[in-house]
Image 1 (cartoon, each protein chain N blue to C red):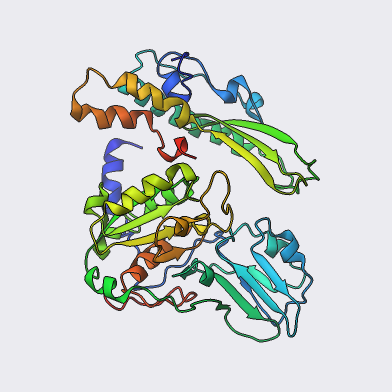
Image 2 (image 1 turned 180 degrees about the vertical axis):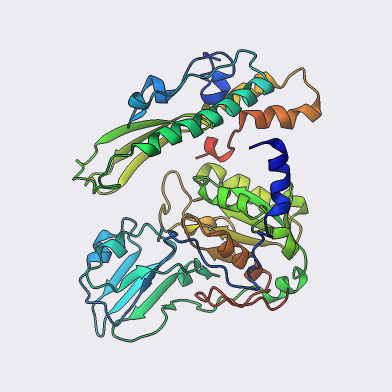
Length: 277
Length: 155
């Protein structure tokens, strides 16, 4: 390909920028996404619970029986979908759920009763209304890696590419926590980085928000150990958890908008339009 | 470079011929033949040139590998692991050699200890030797030419 071709290509290509969240964005084919559960077809074989490498799935056989998935542990590996003998689990191509508390990352279905899974704890995320009103229009983000595998950080990179173009929503990244309204944290919060995380948060002017990006920020997978503090919220006050391993860029956009009250916070609908943008 | 344990592109841009894909080949690396790419100046341009040439070589490698992929499962279940067993694994990452050491818990079903020696961990001290004598505006360029990850040191 000649250099002229390279220079002219952007002129010939159509606009690639997504209109999310104004329009739904369909995940790529081949993207596994979070597993979708059908409580009617489930035969309670227990295969998914046994197959899950991170212990995200719990089956409670008492009474009518309940099936729950902890999105703070789910890494979208698809092992449960492959193991399921009844077809009750399938690839959802759904956007990674959000939650305002660690507990509400758990979704539970009652077996035999159709419907969406419900979160335990405070279901409809209680985002800080007062803070949200102040940060509604322009939002400056400082990224903080608290010991991630860099998967989330690479997804975060894509937010600034021509496809997702985060700046179209009035959101941008800044180099210093002193210029930031929101701290976007990835990783499991290693003990070695806990102090740096605290200092970063304290350097931010108020009002300030913390969004934890990725399943391992919940502490569900790594927990509290000699090396990790047990999740971001063991060290910082988290306003929004974005699940996913890593979360799709749309999920991160949704989480950021939810943190500043620009988007309804139902955990499943991928096509909810923004209200305040 | 050797005294500091430099690795990856950083080492190869300073004339040190090290690449785990060649020195300790795993998977099909011994069969496909990874070319050795080195520069000798050890500066920002040398690291850039190593990266640029390696990027082109990678497309060539991908072309050759994708043409002859064998069939078979892409994942397999782990067998039982003895309690307290340990294992070491290593690979050449884009930043350099990446080494993981892991020890199983008493029942073999949990992880007791995990040590990750990332490429950044080995290369960070070299930045302190590359920067002195340069202008402050050159610092970001020199720093980023090593392409290091902060959190890799603190896990």
